[in-house]
Length: 126
Image 1 (cartoon, rainbow, N blue to C red):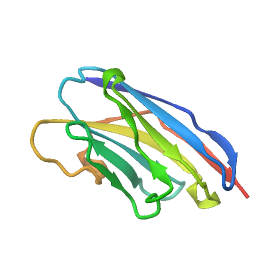
Image 2 (image 1 turned 90 degrees about the vertical axis):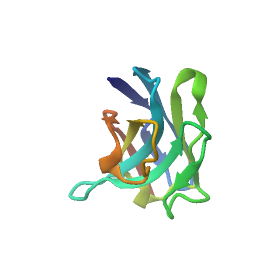
Image 3 (image 1 turned 90 degrees about the horizontal axis):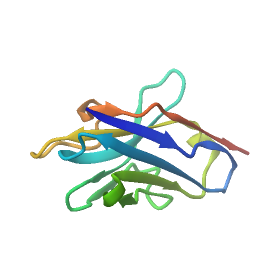
Image 4 (image 1 turned 180 degrees about the vertical axis):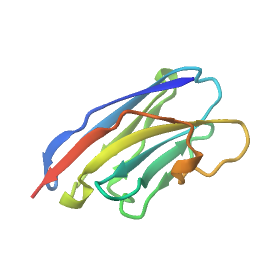
């Protein structure tokens, strides 16, 4: 089992920045990738960004490209979501997710992830 603990959400004005953190603990030896998804009421989870733990290849949704980054700290098994130039449409609950394995798995699909954090609210005001 892997446990994920998120932090860093909150209220920010449009144009501002926030950094979310997600710390993984437990059986992290087979960690394959970690990612961020977001969800607004009445809609499914939307891919935001992900990183493959071995090699560090990063993936971003089109809306996140150029504004968000997904740095990580391997030693702490922690991934971050640095969000800049935030827009009101970025308002959502943001979820951290982790997947385990050694073979190729797609990292932009929420169904592929094995573990999920509790979610943290991000609200961007006009």
